[in-house]
Image 1 (cartoon, rainbow, N blue to C red):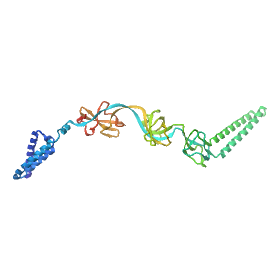
Image 2: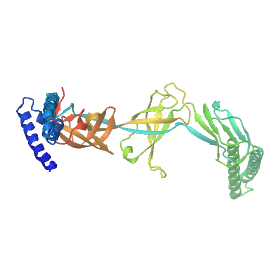
Image 3: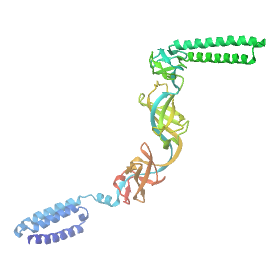
Image 4: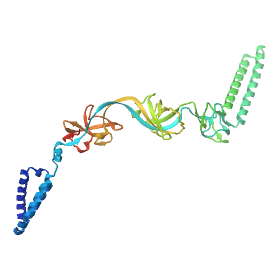
Length: 398
Protein backbone atom coordinates (compact mmCIF):
# COMPACT_ATOMS: atom_id res chain seq x y z
CA UNK A 1 0.00 0.00 0.00
CA UNK A 2 2.78 2.36 0.95
CA UNK A 3 4.67 1.40 -2.19
CA UNK A 4 1.66 2.24 -4.33
CA UNK A 5 1.27 5.58 -2.61
CA UNK A 6 4.97 6.30 -3.10
CA UNK A 7 4.81 5.53 -6.82
CA UNK A 8 1.74 7.68 -7.36
CA UNK A 9 2.98 10.62 -5.34
CA UNK A 10 6.45 10.37 -6.83
CA UNK A 11 4.98 10.78 -10.29
CA UNK A 12 2.96 13.78 -9.15
CA UNK A 13 5.89 15.49 -7.46
CA UNK A 14 8.05 14.77 -10.47
CA UNK A 15 5.50 16.48 -12.72
CA UNK A 16 5.20 19.51 -10.45
CA UNK A 17 8.91 20.01 -10.04
CA UNK A 18 9.52 19.61 -13.76
CA UNK A 19 6.91 22.26 -14.53
CA UNK A 20 8.55 24.57 -12.00
CA UNK A 21 11.94 24.34 -13.64
CA UNK A 22 10.55 24.59 -17.16
CA UNK A 23 8.94 27.89 -16.24
CA UNK A 24 12.05 29.24 -14.58
CA UNK A 25 14.65 31.23 -16.51
CA UNK A 26 17.27 28.58 -15.63
CA UNK A 27 15.62 25.89 -17.79
CA UNK A 28 17.74 23.31 -16.04
CA UNK A 29 15.48 20.39 -16.90
CA UNK A 30 17.38 20.07 -20.20
CA UNK A 31 20.77 20.58 -18.71
CA UNK A 32 21.13 18.54 -15.53
CA UNK A 33 18.94 15.42 -15.66
CA UNK A 34 20.97 13.76 -12.90
CA UNK A 35 20.29 16.54 -10.41
CA UNK A 36 16.57 16.78 -11.36
CA UNK A 37 16.11 13.04 -10.81
CA UNK A 38 17.79 13.45 -7.43
CA UNK A 39 15.22 16.14 -6.55
CA UNK A 40 12.40 13.85 -7.69
CA UNK A 41 13.66 11.10 -5.42
CA UNK A 42 13.88 13.42 -2.36
CA UNK A 43 10.38 14.72 -3.01
CA UNK A 44 8.96 11.21 -3.26
CA UNK A 45 10.73 10.17 -0.08
CA UNK A 46 8.98 12.98 1.83
CA UNK A 47 5.66 11.52 0.71
CA UNK A 48 6.26 8.37 2.73
CA UNK A 49 6.92 10.32 5.93
CA UNK A 50 3.91 10.55 8.30
CA UNK A 51 2.02 13.84 8.25
CA UNK A 52 3.26 15.18 11.65
CA UNK A 53 6.83 14.55 10.64
CA UNK A 54 6.12 15.93 7.19
CA UNK A 55 5.19 19.29 8.60
CA UNK A 56 8.46 19.41 10.47
CA UNK A 57 10.39 18.58 7.32
CA UNK A 58 8.79 21.10 4.98
CA UNK A 59 11.49 23.63 5.70
CA UNK A 60 14.18 21.03 4.94
CA UNK A 61 12.53 20.21 1.63
CA UNK A 62 12.47 23.88 0.65
CA UNK A 63 16.17 24.22 1.47
CA UNK A 64 17.00 21.15 -0.67
CA UNK A 65 15.01 22.52 -3.58
CA UNK A 66 16.77 25.90 -3.42
CA UNK A 67 20.25 24.30 -3.28
CA UNK A 68 19.44 21.98 -6.18
CA UNK A 69 18.17 24.89 -8.23
CA UNK A 70 21.43 26.79 -7.64
CA UNK A 71 23.50 23.72 -8.65
CA UNK A 72 21.54 23.33 -11.83
CA UNK A 73 21.98 26.99 -12.65
CA UNK A 74 25.74 26.58 -12.35
CA UNK A 75 25.87 24.38 -15.41
CA UNK A 76 27.72 26.47 -18.07
CA UNK A 77 25.57 27.56 -20.97
CA UNK A 78 28.59 27.23 -23.32
CA UNK A 79 28.98 23.48 -22.72
CA UNK A 80 25.55 22.71 -23.99
CA UNK A 81 25.94 25.13 -26.85
CA UNK A 82 29.20 23.48 -27.89
CA UNK A 83 27.47 20.12 -27.74
CA UNK A 84 24.80 21.35 -30.12
CA UNK A 85 27.29 23.05 -32.49
CA UNK A 86 29.55 19.96 -32.88
CA UNK A 87 33.07 18.74 -32.14
CA UNK A 88 35.79 21.36 -32.42
CA UNK A 89 38.48 20.35 -34.95
CA UNK A 90 41.38 21.76 -36.94
CA UNK A 91 41.73 21.28 -40.68
CA UNK A 92 44.39 21.12 -43.39
CA UNK A 93 44.22 21.21 -47.18
CA UNK A 94 45.56 18.18 -49.07
CA UNK A 95 47.98 18.93 -51.90
CA UNK A 96 49.45 17.07 -54.84
CA UNK A 97 53.19 16.24 -54.76
CA UNK A 98 55.65 14.57 -57.12
CA UNK A 99 57.62 11.89 -55.31
CA UNK A 100 60.75 10.04 -56.34
CA UNK A 101 60.44 6.49 -55.10
CA UNK A 102 62.99 5.50 -52.45
CA UNK A 103 64.16 1.91 -52.00
CA UNK A 104 65.78 1.03 -48.69
CA UNK A 105 68.09 -1.95 -48.28
CA UNK A 106 71.34 -2.96 -46.62
CA UNK A 107 74.38 -4.89 -47.74
CA UNK A 108 78.08 -5.61 -47.39
CA UNK A 109 80.87 -3.26 -48.50
CA UNK A 110 83.51 -4.73 -50.83
CA UNK A 111 86.24 -3.29 -53.08
CA UNK A 112 85.30 -2.93 -56.71
CA UNK A 113 88.33 -5.10 -57.65
CA UNK A 114 88.33 -7.93 -55.15
CA UNK A 115 90.55 -10.70 -56.54
CA UNK A 116 91.03 -14.31 -55.49
CA UNK A 117 94.66 -15.03 -56.39
CA UNK A 118 95.80 -18.63 -56.99
CA UNK A 119 98.52 -20.78 -58.60
CA UNK A 120 98.23 -21.91 -62.23
CA UNK A 121 99.49 -25.41 -61.32
CA UNK A 122 99.04 -27.58 -58.28
CA UNK A 123 101.76 -28.47 -55.80
CA UNK A 124 103.17 -27.88 -52.35
CA UNK A 125 103.13 -24.31 -51.06
CA UNK A 126 106.70 -23.31 -50.32
CA UNK A 127 106.04 -19.99 -48.58
CA UNK A 128 103.44 -17.22 -48.04
CA UNK A 129 105.06 -13.89 -47.21
CA UNK A 130 101.96 -11.79 -46.44
CA UNK A 131 99.34 -11.68 -43.70
CA UNK A 132 95.78 -10.43 -43.38
CA UNK A 133 95.45 -6.67 -43.70
CA UNK A 134 98.97 -6.12 -45.04
CA UNK A 135 99.48 -3.37 -47.60
CA UNK A 136 101.53 -4.44 -50.64
CA UNK A 137 102.93 -2.78 -53.73
CA UNK A 138 102.58 -3.86 -57.33
CA UNK A 139 104.96 -6.74 -58.19
CA UNK A 140 105.63 -7.86 -54.60
CA UNK A 141 106.02 -11.66 -54.33
CA UNK A 142 103.38 -12.87 -51.90
CA UNK A 143 103.48 -16.69 -52.23
CA UNK A 144 105.28 -19.47 -54.11
CA UNK A 145 105.05 -23.22 -54.74
CA UNK A 146 107.90 -25.65 -54.22
CA UNK A 147 109.75 -25.36 -57.53
CA UNK A 148 111.38 -28.81 -57.57
CA UNK A 149 108.84 -30.44 -59.87
CA UNK A 150 108.08 -27.34 -61.93
CA UNK A 151 111.78 -26.58 -62.52
CA UNK A 152 112.35 -30.17 -63.68
CA UNK A 153 109.48 -29.89 -66.15
CA UNK A 154 110.94 -26.64 -67.39
CA UNK A 155 114.35 -28.24 -67.87
CA UNK A 156 112.73 -31.23 -69.63
CA UNK A 157 110.92 -28.92 -72.04
CA UNK A 158 114.18 -27.08 -72.72
CA UNK A 159 116.07 -30.27 -73.50
CA UNK A 160 113.30 -31.45 -75.80
CA UNK A 161 113.46 -28.18 -77.67
CA UNK A 162 117.24 -28.40 -78.09
CA UNK A 163 116.98 -31.96 -79.50
CA UNK A 164 114.20 -30.97 -81.89
CA UNK A 165 116.30 -28.00 -83.06
CA UNK A 166 119.31 -30.23 -83.77
CA UNK A 167 117.18 -32.75 -85.69
CA UNK A 168 115.62 -29.99 -87.72
CA UNK A 169 118.97 -28.42 -88.72
CA UNK A 170 120.45 -31.80 -89.67
CA UNK A 171 117.52 -32.86 -91.85
CA UNK A 172 117.33 -29.40 -93.38
CA UNK A 173 120.94 -29.68 -94.61
CA UNK A 174 120.27 -33.14 -96.04
CA UNK A 175 117.10 -31.93 -97.73
CA UNK A 176 118.97 -29.07 -99.40
CA UNK A 177 121.48 -31.64 -100.77
CA UNK A 178 118.62 -33.91 -101.92
CA UNK A 179 119.69 -36.52 -99.33
CA UNK A 180 116.42 -36.34 -97.35
CA UNK A 181 112.86 -36.36 -98.46
CA UNK A 182 110.49 -33.45 -98.16
CA UNK A 183 108.38 -35.45 -95.69
CA UNK A 184 111.33 -35.93 -93.34
CA UNK A 185 112.07 -32.23 -93.49
CA UNK A 186 108.46 -31.29 -92.65
CA UNK A 187 108.31 -33.81 -89.78
CA UNK A 188 111.40 -32.37 -88.10
CA UNK A 189 110.02 -28.84 -88.54
CA UNK A 190 106.76 -29.85 -86.85
CA UNK A 191 108.64 -31.54 -84.00
CA UNK A 192 110.66 -28.36 -83.47
CA UNK A 193 107.52 -26.21 -83.25
CA UNK A 194 105.92 -28.65 -80.78
CA UNK A 195 109.02 -28.59 -78.60
CA UNK A 196 109.00 -24.79 -78.69
CA UNK A 197 105.35 -24.74 -77.56
CA UNK A 198 106.06 -27.20 -74.75
CA UNK A 199 108.89 -24.98 -73.57
CA UNK A 200 106.60 -21.91 -73.59
CA UNK A 201 103.98 -23.81 -71.56
CA UNK A 202 106.56 -24.87 -68.98
CA UNK A 203 107.83 -21.31 -68.74
CA UNK A 204 104.27 -19.97 -68.29
CA UNK A 205 103.52 -22.51 -65.55
CA UNK A 206 106.79 -21.61 -63.82
CA UNK A 207 105.93 -17.91 -63.84
CA UNK A 208 102.47 -18.57 -62.39
CA UNK A 209 103.78 -20.80 -59.65
CA UNK A 210 104.55 -17.52 -57.92
CA UNK A 211 101.81 -15.10 -56.80
CA UNK A 212 102.68 -11.44 -57.26
CA UNK A 213 100.64 -8.36 -56.35
CA UNK A 214 98.82 -7.26 -59.54
CA UNK A 215 98.67 -3.65 -58.27
CA UNK A 216 99.01 -1.61 -55.10
CA UNK A 217 96.50 -2.86 -52.60
CA UNK A 218 95.74 -4.75 -49.42
CA UNK A 219 95.56 -8.38 -48.39
CA UNK A 220 92.01 -9.07 -47.26
CA UNK A 221 92.49 -12.71 -46.33
CA UNK A 222 95.10 -15.46 -46.61
CA UNK A 223 93.18 -18.64 -47.46
CA UNK A 224 95.95 -21.26 -47.30
CA UNK A 225 99.02 -22.21 -45.25
CA UNK A 226 102.59 -23.09 -46.07
CA UNK A 227 103.40 -26.78 -46.86
CA UNK A 228 99.80 -27.46 -47.89
CA UNK A 229 99.22 -29.32 -51.15
CA UNK A 230 96.94 -27.13 -53.21
CA UNK A 231 95.07 -27.80 -56.43
CA UNK A 232 95.40 -25.63 -59.54
CA UNK A 233 93.19 -22.53 -59.36
CA UNK A 234 92.34 -22.93 -55.67
CA UNK A 235 92.23 -19.45 -54.00
CA UNK A 236 95.26 -18.68 -51.84
CA UNK A 237 95.01 -14.92 -51.21
CA UNK A 238 92.02 -12.56 -51.28
CA UNK A 239 93.35 -9.25 -52.63
CA UNK A 240 91.81 -5.78 -53.01
CA UNK A 241 93.28 -3.03 -55.15
CA UNK A 242 93.68 0.36 -53.51
CA UNK A 243 92.98 2.19 -56.79
CA UNK A 244 89.38 1.06 -57.21
CA UNK A 245 86.12 2.26 -55.75
CA UNK A 246 84.07 0.65 -53.01
CA UNK A 247 80.90 -1.24 -53.80
CA UNK A 248 77.95 -1.80 -51.50
CA UNK A 249 76.04 -4.82 -52.75
CA UNK A 250 72.39 -4.71 -51.68
CA UNK A 251 69.46 -7.04 -52.45
CA UNK A 252 66.33 -5.55 -54.03
CA UNK A 253 62.91 -7.13 -54.61
CA UNK A 254 61.38 -7.60 -58.05
CA UNK A 255 58.79 -4.93 -57.24
CA UNK A 256 61.52 -2.31 -56.71
CA UNK A 257 64.08 -3.41 -59.29
CA UNK A 258 61.92 -2.17 -62.18
CA UNK A 259 62.28 1.43 -60.92
CA UNK A 260 66.09 1.31 -60.55
CA UNK A 261 68.50 2.25 -63.34
CA UNK A 262 72.28 2.59 -63.58
CA UNK A 263 73.35 6.06 -62.47
CA UNK A 264 70.52 6.56 -59.96
CA UNK A 265 71.78 8.28 -56.82
CA UNK A 266 71.78 6.81 -53.32
CA UNK A 267 72.65 7.71 -49.75
CA UNK A 268 74.60 5.26 -47.59
CA UNK A 269 75.23 5.21 -43.84
CA UNK A 270 77.55 3.01 -41.78
CA UNK A 271 77.37 2.23 -38.08
CA UNK A 272 81.10 2.92 -37.93
CA UNK A 273 80.43 6.57 -38.82
CA UNK A 274 77.13 7.53 -37.18
CA UNK A 275 75.61 10.70 -38.57
CA UNK A 276 77.73 10.65 -41.74
CA UNK A 277 76.03 10.24 -45.11
CA UNK A 278 78.12 8.76 -47.95
CA UNK A 279 77.05 9.61 -51.49
CA UNK A 280 76.75 6.74 -53.95
CA UNK A 281 75.27 5.80 -57.32
CA UNK A 282 74.05 2.61 -58.95
CA UNK A 283 77.10 1.00 -60.57
CA UNK A 284 75.61 -2.21 -61.90
CA UNK A 285 72.38 -4.23 -61.69
CA UNK A 286 72.20 -8.01 -61.72
CA UNK A 287 70.67 -9.53 -64.82
CA UNK A 288 68.92 -12.32 -62.93
CA UNK A 289 67.54 -13.00 -59.46
CA UNK A 290 69.48 -14.89 -56.83
CA UNK A 291 68.13 -18.47 -57.01
CA UNK A 292 68.24 -18.82 -53.22
CA UNK A 293 66.72 -15.50 -52.09
CA UNK A 294 64.73 -14.42 -55.15
CA UNK A 295 66.17 -10.90 -54.93
CA UNK A 296 68.25 -8.90 -57.42
CA UNK A 297 71.70 -7.65 -56.42
CA UNK A 298 72.37 -3.97 -57.01
CA UNK A 299 75.94 -2.68 -56.65
CA UNK A 300 76.36 0.88 -55.42
CA UNK A 301 79.64 2.72 -56.03
CA UNK A 302 80.31 4.48 -52.71
CA UNK A 303 82.49 7.57 -52.32
CA UNK A 304 84.77 7.24 -49.30
CA UNK A 305 84.34 10.93 -48.38
CA UNK A 306 87.94 10.87 -47.04
CA UNK A 307 86.93 8.24 -44.49
CA UNK A 308 88.67 4.95 -43.87
CA UNK A 309 86.44 2.20 -45.25
CA UNK A 310 87.07 -1.49 -44.68
CA UNK A 311 85.82 -4.58 -46.44
CA UNK A 312 82.87 -6.09 -44.65
CA UNK A 313 81.25 -2.89 -43.36
CA UNK A 314 77.47 -3.27 -43.28
CA UNK A 315 75.84 -0.25 -44.90
CA UNK A 316 72.25 0.94 -45.03
CA UNK A 317 71.34 2.38 -48.41
CA UNK A 318 68.47 4.58 -49.55
CA UNK A 319 68.23 4.48 -53.35
CA UNK A 320 66.55 7.50 -54.94
CA UNK A 321 65.02 6.12 -58.12
CA UNK A 322 64.39 8.13 -61.27
CA UNK A 323 60.75 7.00 -61.32
CA UNK A 324 58.36 9.83 -60.32
CA UNK A 325 54.85 9.31 -58.90
CA UNK A 326 51.96 11.68 -58.18
CA UNK A 327 50.56 11.37 -54.64
CA UNK A 328 48.23 13.35 -52.40
CA UNK A 329 49.98 14.71 -49.30
CA UNK A 330 48.08 14.89 -46.00
CA UNK A 331 49.22 15.41 -42.38
CA UNK A 332 50.11 12.20 -40.53
CA UNK A 333 47.97 13.20 -37.54
CA UNK A 334 44.88 13.18 -39.76
CA UNK A 335 45.03 9.38 -39.87
CA UNK A 336 42.34 7.91 -37.62
CA UNK A 337 43.02 4.21 -38.09
CA UNK A 338 45.12 1.98 -40.33
CA UNK A 339 45.44 -1.66 -41.29
CA UNK A 340 48.44 -2.52 -43.43
CA UNK A 341 48.52 0.08 -46.19
CA UNK A 342 44.83 0.95 -45.85
CA UNK A 343 43.84 3.88 -43.64
CA UNK A 344 40.90 6.09 -42.66
CA UNK A 345 40.70 9.89 -42.59
CA UNK A 346 37.86 12.41 -42.30
CA UNK A 347 37.20 14.95 -45.03
CA UNK A 348 35.62 18.27 -44.01
CA UNK A 349 32.63 19.18 -46.17
CA UNK A 350 30.03 21.83 -45.27
CA UNK A 351 30.66 21.64 -41.52
CA UNK A 352 30.34 17.85 -41.66
CA UNK A 353 32.91 15.07 -41.20
CA UNK A 354 32.90 12.51 -44.03
CA UNK A 355 34.84 9.25 -43.59
CA UNK A 356 37.19 8.34 -46.45
CA UNK A 357 39.37 5.27 -47.07
CA UNK A 358 42.87 5.94 -48.44
CA UNK A 359 45.88 3.86 -49.43
CA UNK A 360 49.12 4.84 -47.71
CA UNK A 361 51.91 4.78 -50.31
CA UNK A 362 54.75 6.45 -48.39
CA UNK A 363 55.50 8.03 -45.02
CA UNK A 364 57.52 11.24 -45.43
CA UNK A 365 58.30 12.61 -41.98
CA UNK A 366 55.11 14.07 -40.52
CA UNK A 367 53.30 13.71 -43.85
CA UNK A 368 51.51 10.80 -45.51
CA UNK A 369 51.50 10.28 -49.27
CA UNK A 370 48.24 8.61 -50.18
CA UNK A 371 46.09 7.63 -53.15
CA UNK A 372 42.34 7.18 -53.38
CA UNK A 373 39.65 8.61 -51.13
CA UNK A 374 40.95 12.19 -51.12
CA UNK A 375 42.49 14.40 -53.76
CA UNK A 376 44.40 17.66 -53.96
CA UNK A 377 42.36 20.58 -52.64
CA UNK A 378 40.23 18.51 -50.25
CA UNK A 379 40.01 19.76 -46.67
CA UNK A 380 41.14 17.13 -44.17
CA UNK A 381 40.32 17.07 -40.44
CA UNK A 382 43.45 16.94 -38.29
CA UNK A 383 43.11 17.52 -34.56
CA UNK A 384 39.85 16.18 -33.21
CA UNK A 385 39.45 13.56 -35.94
CA UNK A 386 39.56 10.79 -33.33
CA UNK A 387 36.41 12.19 -31.66
CA UNK A 388 34.11 12.47 -34.68
CA UNK A 389 32.04 9.97 -36.60
CA UNK A 390 30.90 9.80 -40.19
CA UNK A 391 28.33 12.50 -40.93
CA UNK A 392 28.76 14.30 -37.62
CA UNK A 393 28.62 18.09 -37.45
CA UNK A 394 31.98 19.71 -36.59
CA UNK A 395 33.21 23.20 -35.82
CA UNK A 396 36.57 24.45 -37.17
CA UNK A 397 38.78 26.00 -34.54
CA UNK A 398 40.36 29.23 -35.72
